[in-house]
Length: 377
Image 1 (cartoon, rainbow, N blue to C red):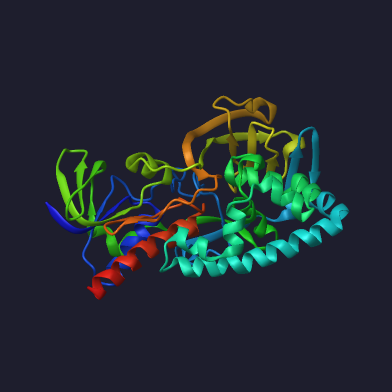
Image 2 (cartoon, one colour):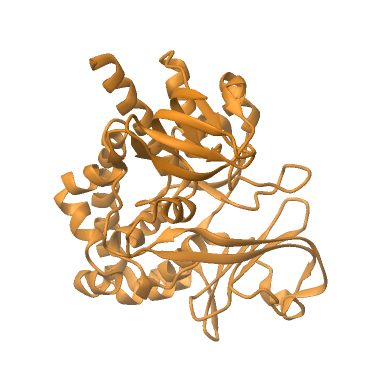
């Protein structure tokens, strides 16, 4: 069966690509066994098991999201080795470092939002190279950048735990671009959220082929795709919008990014007194990543361990659900992954920059490049 344009993957990036092509009235087929990708929730739909928080700057995703509780810094409880403290105690005693950090994050925010706008029509890796500042950050180890900016104390007392919560990865394994993507939210509101997946997929439901791709082979006119039922699709153009780890494996991509992994436990049970913040976050020496209280009184418990000591934190804990994100995403490294592999193949997803908004924009970008080429031919 021959198709002009095929999108592989029904997650955030694939949905964005499909909506963009559909709006431009470009025919396509979207191949996916399910909608949503790594967007997964509890049975009642109120607790996110995958992507958990959303910054106020996520203007594309916010079209389809309902904001929940704000993650307020004053209600965060930090755990750094044997020390526990609140936001104010970590910040106020580091006044000059806080000023230097805010100066750096303000500049990064401006550059990063410009980069995002460019990514709507330009491949992610190309847009990063176009910014001398961001490209330098991508090629600088996070620890080196922290020392250069003279902000080590405030980072390792406050930012480290937030970075660990969002990346499941120690700072020593990150580049400065990864670090700043999290650090910039020190003065940007961040919220829990509920995503309205039905609104997102409404215009594109009929374009879906319920299948998965097991093999991609380059052909003279594009790609031959072997599906899980052994049927084949011939595509002139392909947008590969699966998660970065799967895409890298499918295409045998060479890169130096690492796989971030974590176990998620949805737990019913009362937190012990020393862990009664809305959000408990831990430094990267701990197997416990974070604990977040949900509106119904249950908790999300993220850990690097498959069998954490829940009794250490809860009275009579009961596990409602367990997910192992293996991997959750790729992160770190200094080698950019090309989003336009060739004239017939585009990548869409968090290959070079993590986060829902970045993934969604990468889908728009791949589709916009195809639209431009079709209209120019």
